[in-house]
Image: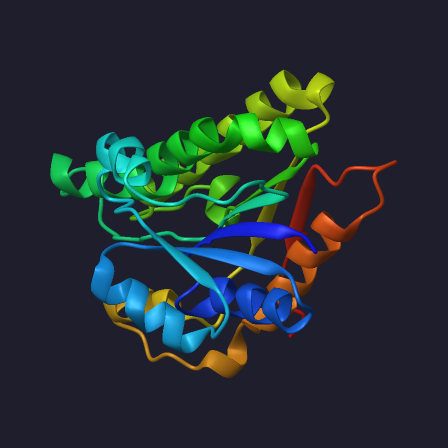
Length: 229
């Protein structure tokens, strides 16, 4: 039985991944921003355990985790949480940049640092669910795309650094996916939202499981997922 740590499991892609892993009998530790959210996740995924850590405040993650019971071993760390606030470079205040950089880049880096010792022991896997914005930046997507470009750099550097330790690193780049974050993006864009026009979160979950289930003789570095309709 493998043990997975997952951020962003409350909805969308993260929920799909958590559900699939739980159904097959794996052990899950789900990150929650506070105790109330942890209680909700425990009810949503019976049998899963929770860890409380606010991704908007990466400076406090080490302290928060030091007060909790952590897993004995970790087979995969799945970074799926993310936030997105649109706006032109000439309009966005520093707090908007900092919020996205904290949740989308700095917290994944910090969580990876904290759990790398365990991942080295198990020759585990780190998966970063990135975005199409991690490869191409468009108008009004500057802050979000910058955080995701940074996430790609983090993954690429980590892969080279940890290859000798047997730790695998995968980046997944989904196109627009039918998630609550996508609904919020449409609100910001002033457009009507039709979830049927976008990728089903279950399809992205399939790619994540493909990466972590791949036999040890191979490694998927990058997976790009685009709408098929």
